[in-house]
Image (cartoon, rainbow, N blue to C red; front, side, top):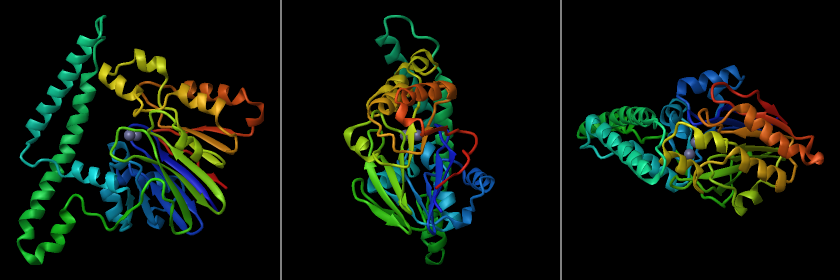
Length: 340
Ligand SMILES: [Zn+2]
Ligand SMILES: [Zn+2]
């Protein structure tokens, strides 16, 4: 039996379980381990039966609960080499920086971005949501601080050979096992075949996936600035299509984000808008999927109904695609499992 369960989708955390044959894979670990397990159990998935975790890219909303979850379950994590390195850099920052210095740097960067935005705009910018940026930094800084603490403890105890094993466990980058894959090179985890493909996004080496199990093909494409030809090719002939529908262009334009963040989201390495997803569905999608799932919806710059209506309009324009069931992945609760 093939089963596809989106546990969470959006900028506060992304995780999906793909099951086929005797294999279960967690795609991204963007929720805390506790929340991840809670949602899995609610959805009728047993966390203890997961065989592996596979990561699309190192942004926090995709890796937040990674170490704890992988360690707790003792399962391997599949990365591209670039993503693994970026993740390790994130966990082992320059150690001379204190929390206060880190926070100050974040504030300075936010102020610089704001000044740049003010200068670039002819009309005065609306009140920028700087608090969001600072809050982001605080979150990151406390995570980093913990990591720094763990790191230095590991270094101190590594002096004593007897404590070396324990020290290894305290290394924030320690994982039970790491496996590498490369975009464009299909591989297998147990009974599930995986085709990773490059996506345009501002991360070290971001990828999307097509999973194939028991003859069912499921495509996974979020966090991409646009849909280049290599991605279009991957999205052909799939039975399930999970596609980003991140923001409504007008809402983003008029919304609370500082200008620099808006630019980032809109860029070729940002996120896919409702309009861009709809244009793909209307003009290039082959209509093969039984399910189309809109994912990674922004809570600030989108509304589920807007995303749905925009995609529906695109699909309805093509009478032959009425069989496609349109679903929306949510941030705060799991989507009911899809079975094949
Ligand atoms: Zn993301
Ligand atoms: Zn991302």
